[in-house]
Image (cartoon, rainbow, N blue to C red; front, side):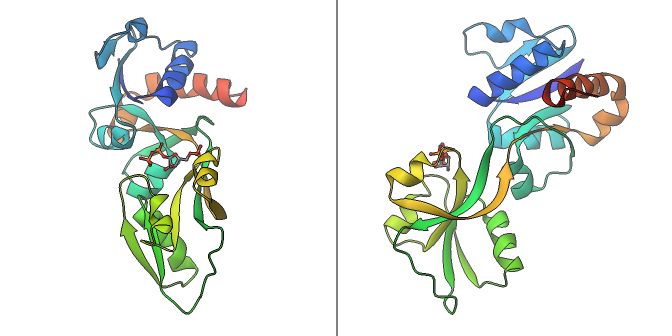
Length: 207
Ligand code: PRP
């Protein structure tokens, strides 16, 4: 039995479809109720807040899980990153107001949920920054003068557009990744290996 942490929401539903097609079904998950744990023959799946998936896997409460590359880069959990599922594609960007003019002599005020990613990105550019850590609605920060730029996820670009902001730099492309707990991978190599092989076949069409 493999314990699987699935990200709650639309991405998680797509991921579950992939698991089912891979032969790791858990039919009770399709029932419309508020349960969080579902048992199948080969897997036990549970819905987890997307940003918490890596914690469950790192600490062994789940053997495998699916998480955005953004979370992996931000929290750097001690897990194995096994496979790019090529779902939930988006990008981590720097965005700002359309009329913003950057003065490289000045400290850049950066609002973000992804402080580590932003810090690393500007450290590589040797740019002096001031991080303003927010938990959501990041787009408000430059509009209200709280920051000069934001570092955030852009999927369709609609949120930026509707708030008169524009992406100016792409930091990294993001997509959903299958991650595995290090000890579980050792003790359940056969089962987890089969799962990875079957998912890989769906994503890349080969082994
Ligand atoms: C994310 C991100 C942007 C939005 C981008 O927010 O932070 O706000 O999606 O999507 P778009 O390019 O398709 O418009 P999320 O919905 O995760 O909520 P948040 O504001 O709490 O970060």
